[in-house]
Image (cartoon, rainbow, N blue to C red; front, side, top):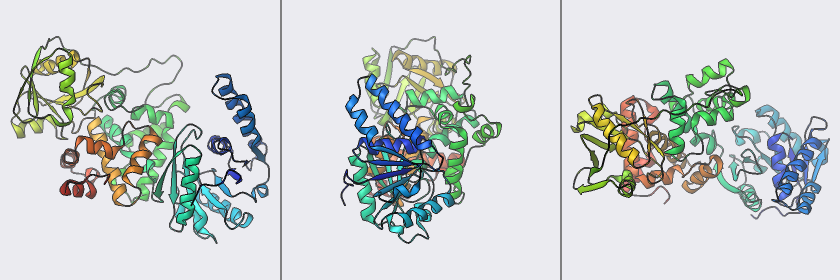
Length: 505
């Protein structure tokens, strides 16, 4: 089914930030748009706000004045819901309350034409539940935009149990025509993004609770080693802990208490204290005017390193060798089991085991583990941990080697999987389970995480890049270390690795 014609009238209900943003997107794409809010005067205020925002783009030379005028002319504020009767597509962006939304959809079904598409911008409610009890549930579909709608590319097209495939297909093509990056997904808890993203927050929260490092250090590692736009603590401060915690609880409850989605006691304490992040002035960080920005901790080494030995294939750590060579480090290569010898130290990429456990099991002396990086050739900071019997001088030799390559080094407590590695492994694991359960395709899930939450790489593509066998081994070691079902590997990961298949096949 093709996209809605530009002549089709689009109605948006709810003139808050999200509703106004969706109305702007549709108007920019050439549709006449009616914007309605049940609060008198709010729709008109929203249109005026859109006009001001577009005016700022004109001032910056990013928008032609006549284009601004044409967009605003297509926006029509309405004071009565009956004015929406001739809409071909109605998108509701009202309060996240199942009963309120159901009542609205029933009203719209009675008001609009039989073939009018009724779309919900819900981020968490079941499309199947929203459509239940309607005379034409096949016309109800999720059209989940991300905030701010005019800027964020992703739109999740969510099909409920009764949604007609042609309706979902039409909205998919419509979103593309509006300049967005749509993905198809089923109506399951959290859809794609709010489900797959849970480990990004959960692993940092757990590491903080277990004393791995402070917030600023953990955030810096996710940014500077992992390539994420923000760390988990600064991102949840921005989102608002009341919102982020509520979504986590909602997904946890919807999956009948599956511990993969277990909420954090650390975050609950912030919510209970009213420390909701930026909007309250205090979250993990202080946002008071005179507050000093928290700085990550960094190890320093007094030693100088000129040479190291590369034994065997280093796997995902291999790009570090190029950087060491370019930094003037003399390299000796020989056969071995994938380790770097630096003075008295043995440096290896973490595989999800504790450093002390791995040192004992493999007989490795002065063992230092290094965390995963998106690209070791450009990473500016990485984490290390070390076994209990590693000498301080040996650890400092590793720090000196990495510093020579221009990489800042953060110390973590001896916890399994470090920061980036366990986060990426868990993101890939959840994404794999979503594919296995038909929530979305591998390509759509990777696209959703990149376009919706700005991940530097889709989690499934990342798992394939570092190796499915390696990702699986990390998860198995995390599960063994914690003894919890939280870290159980997805059947799809196991099956794909056993078959030698790719997740994107």
